[in-house]
Image (tube, rainbow, N blue to C red):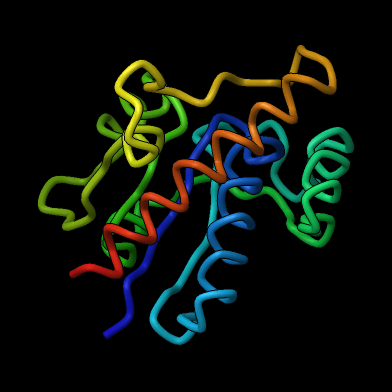
Length: 156
């Protein structure tokens, strides 16, 4: 059985492609790639078709993760049926996804960070207007949350 996971942020050029790629690497390293379908999207359409932010690419590359081939896309109505779990990077993304979810759609929508196990860290702050440290923080949070996510999903 395949578990389908969609990571979502605002523009799909910083946080969600980072989380997608971190989770993809963790899944591959665990030898579980056949058990997961992994993607990311944004709630907004400003960056559709664009590569990830160069600073996000650099921060990921420092952790051995290449996100350069990713191209931003917007969340589609069909995502709420085709994915089992849709993970929002922040509270606004969560509200937007809840508003976008078609009636009767089956996807579970949750925040990503609670999987890290630290109740104080509820969101992945948007690094877009920040500096290199903010992008490193995004990678660190994605690593913590995605490791917890994989532990939880593997236990099922």
